[in-house]
Length: 567
Image (cartoon, helix red, strand yellow):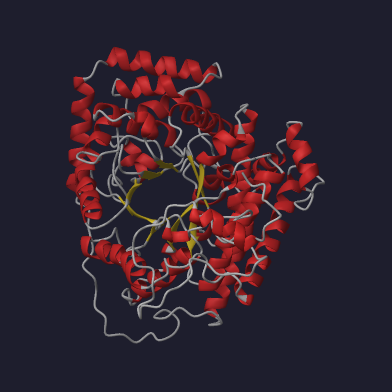
């Protein structure tokens, strides 16, 4: 709970919590052998593990548990990606993160005419539960946490993972991991949607209900700022748009009658770690603080876990350059360190060749080792929030929070509200009355293209500063001379697509088509009756319905979203 004993000072409260926490039995001294405290501050300053969690969620910081090394990977077919996963886990990776190819991301089968030439090229091709079985062959889904970066068809892909786990004999109620699912950010930045916003939100609400009841440790919603930042936003825009999306999903859960203290711990976040070192650290610290205050003061969350902002971080793909690609190792190391000093819960480090192609095995290993060097050699795990109290970092944290709050006010205004972010009691009263003010603002902003225009303007201003050489990128607009040579890059053979299509056709011919069609009809009937679609969708997946068939059945009823033309 977040009620504090005010008869004790903050340092004493933190010390009591620290002593009650599990601490790893490893060396936490400096390289020279100096003993250091697990955290630093004054008697009355904020300490790690205390509301509003600016300094981290846990009193132990990384002494209790280090961040999860979760490398994002996927290419070709399920067998090839399975081999990469085994390499990552065998060399010290702590969790998996699945990258899907474009047809899968758009809810298309590999033999769909619109999939031609794209199968396996930007991620792994997944057509059915049988592919999921191959993808995780020999990997215990009950023991390894798995993140899946997919939004439009997230719910049927989730069902395929569940069925693959069932077939492997895993207790699905104990699964742990994260599904991105975040559809708001697709309309705002990435544009990998299938339906209009309302049908997508219906599926997401179904998933939240299902996981809260059946898979309590699983996080059915990873709210993504990464793609917003990669599209060109500022740090404050990334933070504000992402947290506003998160507030929208909280309102979705509340509209379903779910208990915020039950479903909110199932929300997680995904941020970009860009190259401006201190700005990124301040962004992460401000994110935890804003989220905790809104969850407690506006949405009524009572427990620490429901107020915690847990987040995964990926280093900035948009910061990588094709010119002098070995410089990308340095960029990635700096970005990863900012995520760690900002208190990330898990981390992916980009490979040096990702601006050119999918990572080669050697480049993927260097990216993995980057995290391991930071974790094992630098001493950053020894002290929680070591930059807390820095005049610069604290001022920058406050500044980013202020900018984010101004953006929240614009979103509320777009939803027709006169309330602002500095009126939590009034906002809470509106929520109790069933007024989903942030959701209304999000939908209006999407409809009018406001988010896109804000990101486009920020991206334009940054590009102008590059053209004027006011901002520098080494190897691009300064220090352009180099002796580096071309890289050998990973290339996905056309045979991957040929074999994937052949396998898919064979699986269709071997299944019971009548059972598939009956299951799809039950799923559609549930969707149209506004019933929860997860169980009937699982039945369709068990019958070997493909991803494209499931999405097409729903497309026939809900239609496809078309973004309005804007000039």
